[in-house]
Amino acid sequence: MQSVADAGSVILAGLPALALAIPEHAPRPGGIAVLKIPASQNGTPPIVRFEGRRALVVRRDDNWLAVIGIPLDREPGPATASICNVGDNEPRTLTFDIGTHAYREQHLTVKPGYVNPAPEQLERIIAEREHIDAALARWSDKAVDAVTLRAPVDGTRSSSFGSRRFFNDEPRAPHRGMDIAAGAGTRISAPLDGTVLLAGDYYFTGNTVIVDHGQGLLTLYAHLRDLAVEDGQILERGERLGTVGATGRVTGPHLHFAVYLNGTPVDPALLLEAP
Image 1 (cartoon, helix red, strand yellow):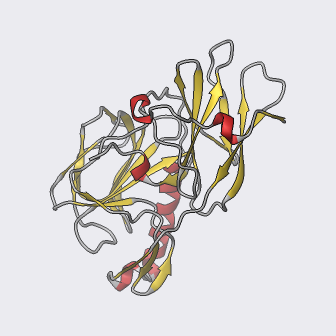
Image 2 (cartoon, helix red, strand yellow):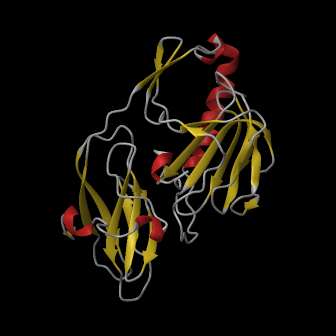
């Protein structure tokens, strides 16, 4: 593979991210790398992959920008993305550095059945996990112009993303979303145009919606009281998804809001417009 350059020459530096409707470059576990790629002569978008998965690209002036989600369990250090333009003999590589980031611990008390489910629930849980994972791996070639998101609900945003979670003092996987505190029945709206991939009731996440916004940018909404959408529905920004509830594994009414890029959960705070 041909190497393009080191990170210093490819990272978006000094450009007004908000004006471009893209997130800031925050290369850390659970963060986002925003990399600049010179446009090809034929104007076609490059194919960018990170650790084997397609990454979102968006056109800005004379450049393409790759917006790459970094896994929470990714070790800090050098990282490489591959770039392939139409007509290239071989992929090029783009290097950047992943920094460190400390996430906190969170201790929660829930009903015992949500920590150690009964055997009769395990078949349901496994089937639901496969269904959700298949939706989150979805890729569509839809062009994406804006990557920043409007808040889906009015409420207090927590910094719980990435926190190591203990339910009833038993360790579980890190939290992969942001909890937004809001009263039961508060309206939840689509933060960007998209298509509903999944809308249903699940054991851990309760009433859940997943929306595909294009090129691996997906959003997930959990614990809803009611659902206002169905699978396959095309949405416009601001359209109603449902209302805040307390279904599934919760300690009270709130919205669990998650954002995925290239199949990877990333910190929603990096993409949300300022409150």
